[in-house]
Length: 201
Image (cartoon, rainbow, N blue to C red; front, top):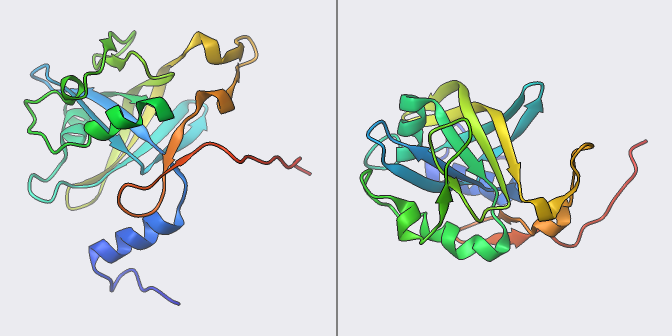
């Protein structure tokens, strides 16, 4: 079946992309508005893009009524954000931050999440997330009406001590993190299980 993406409705294009590009890691992003209001929201159009410098990319879709989502508006205004990865034990809290709240509402408070100060950026970190990347915006590209791609430099990485196998060598117990990812359709997620290994030739 050939899908001409230039001729399809937006919702059909979205379904095709999200049903085929799986699993997708979840960036649980915290930002702070210029007025000082914290914001948290998860995004699954996300991945790491390189290591010299360490970079991540976020795809931030538009809000159907408001235009730029709060996360995108805050990153454009301040240039700073924190990406957290989501363990299975925090799935419900992550889902709670999906709420469509107005900009003056702190989703972290709604979800009952503890926060701590970041080291190098203004947005807070989610205290119980096992991995957090403090980021500064390197570049942002508006790829459609109020649709934004952000490439951020990771200026500081936090990994919970219990998952660090060898700090000097950068060895992390990835399996033990128990991270979840997004799958197809509304509300579908996957666990990081059933792994296999192949040796690169």
